[in-house]
Amino acid sequence: MNDKTQNMLSQKLSNRRLIVDLLALMFGLGAWVGVNGIYVQLPLLVNSAPEGWSLPAHMVMLVQFANLGPILYTLYIKYSKWACDKYITYIVLAAGALSTFILAFVYNKTTTIFGNEHSTALLSLMFVTAIVGCTSSVLFMPYMRNYREIYLVSYLVGEGLSGFVPSVVALIQGVGGNPECLNSTKPNSDKVEFLPFYPEPRFSSQAFFIFIGTLLFLCYLAFLGLNNLAVAVGERVKHPGSMETLPTDTRAPPSYKTNSGWTMSKQVYSYLLIMMAVVCFLSNGTLPSIQSYSCLPYGNVAYHLTVTLSSMAGPLAMCLGFVIKLPKVNLLSCLLVILIGLSGFVCFLAVQSPTPPLQNSWIGEFLVVLSWILISGLIGFIKLGITTLFRPDPGRGLYYTGVATQIGSLAGAIITPVFGDASKMY
Image (cartoon, rainbow, N blue to C red):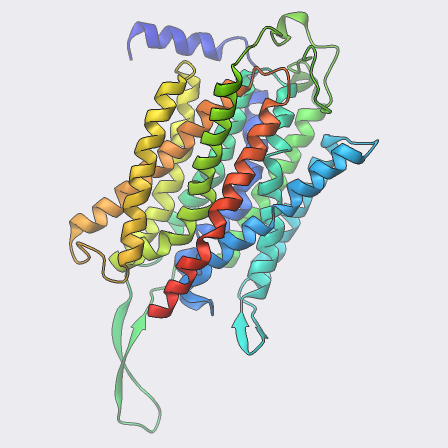
């Protein structure tokens, strides 16, 4: 690390409260840790769930139905005379923690609906955690405008860690490798059958979901600390001319006030919102639904590494916000082109499933895992870049960024039934 980089890092780390960084990080962690925790369990869940390989597509569709949360929130703040984001956030985080704890004990319960067996307990409780994630786009992130700009990066890193932390735990948990074919004979029968045997993980999905529920409870406590600890209250700002309904602290020092001279052309403003929608179209809608189809043909190990390592790449990319300057719009555009190219590659693999190219080669496994890692890293960095560009906006820039996030995610989920029908080939 050269002297210039060291000086830049020292400058960014000075004049800040690390305890507030930690609280903001934990607050961001609570946004999607519930949903991401369920996603990283997919290599285990798809083997026992009645939906099989189509379970990810079902889950993605359910997450998009959870957009009911931000819609109701938007209507509420528009027509309600009493709107306090703080108390709404308390309710949302508490609901996420409680539903995840319950999920730990009923995730494998199924019911028969119209003659078909479904994972109703898993999908129903995931819907509750998905409401937390979807609502966070228009509730959690805009709330961080109440704090100095440096803490927005901490929040975004925490949001990225909502995939990283469950992934690390899932790596420790393991899936036991690829299935093996074992001889099996039924009682009173001489017929020999070959059945797949899946090695047991190091600990159960129940223990995993209890851990995720505990994390969500800690996120609730972190938000409680942001609103009540004196050190956190002192880091709030007052936005001149703001149209936000969010609470602000008039006691904040004048030197912390946002510069009201922030400007951005209407064309760039709209372009960045469209870019955010495109990124979320891929990351929250299309790509998760086809991940199993693009990876499972290369084996359970490749699928597990893809799910876990790609979840780590996002927050690592967001950590660059601590040491680099704000990215330019042109750079974000170039990265978006690369992201679209890689996304097209993994979609091609999903279309070619169950016999994609290089299926029985280590090169194929390496390429599919590397592609997903790069995709996740690019998504994280582009989201960070767009969000930090909107942070100085004295208007509702972060709110509209959240709206664009949900619109893109919903649009991406519309095409997921196409991939869900692909399960018939298995």
